[in-house]
Amino acid sequence: MVEFNPNWYKKFIEKSNEKNLLINKVSELLDGKPKNSCLEIGLGISPYFAKELSKLFNRYVIIEREVFNGEIPENVELIQANWEDKKIDKKFDVIVASHVIYYFRNKKKALEKMLASLNKDGRIFFVVNGSTADYGHLKLAFSKMLDIKYQFTYDELKKLLQGTNFKEYTLPSIINFKNYDELHEILKLSFDTYPKEYVKFKPKIIEYFKKNVRGKKFVIDQKIFEVIL
Ligand SMILES: C[S@@+](CC[C@H](N)C(=O)[O-])C[C@H]1O[C@@H](n2cnc3c(N)ncnc32)[C@H](O)[C@@H]1O
Image (cartoon, rainbow, N blue to C red; front, side, top):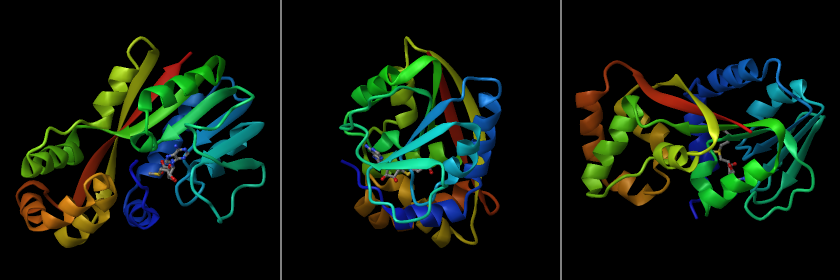
């Protein structure tokens, strides 16, 4: 199981504009669609999605694996549980699973369970990092350093979604950084499957940044998959 590191997540989120981009796009895609109930899987360290999206729904539930002691909006129900084990008694119109699928033990089963938990005409919004832009190129360069074949969760998810009715959207998000040392720190979260190697190869990664990342911006293509039942 991949551990989620809240400190690395915080460092990353503070320097990225991705949450606003994603929330605006999901809100736009929900316009005119059934919005009685929403389930969000994997909260992170702050209810970014719930703060905005819960205003659109009568019932808004979050399932988060870890203990969360922060504040959540009044009308939001927070359940501390692992999605892969939790029994669900009611179905939802919408499920939001943003940057959480990486952590599932069995992605296929977790995804099937989401599909089975949707009402008719319901939709799931998956968000994952794409395999393109600066992020994709860096991952491929890193996998060469390690001499491994890297599989993007993006490709894995797309394969798992074959046979479903889905649309794909790309939102380039930007990370602002002061220097390459800081960029290496900010991106730690994205390498949480290889934390030791990411530190070991830091000099090589910094060399890579110098040659390939222009200006003080690093682009990650955010991929939204909208699955419609
Ligand atoms: C990278 S954060 C993403 C948070 C937020 N959705 C976002 O897009 O920024 C992943 C979160 O999912 C939670 N998580 C991981 N696996 C989970 C599971 N099986 N069930 C529920 N939550 C899970 C982690 O504890 C963490 O809070």
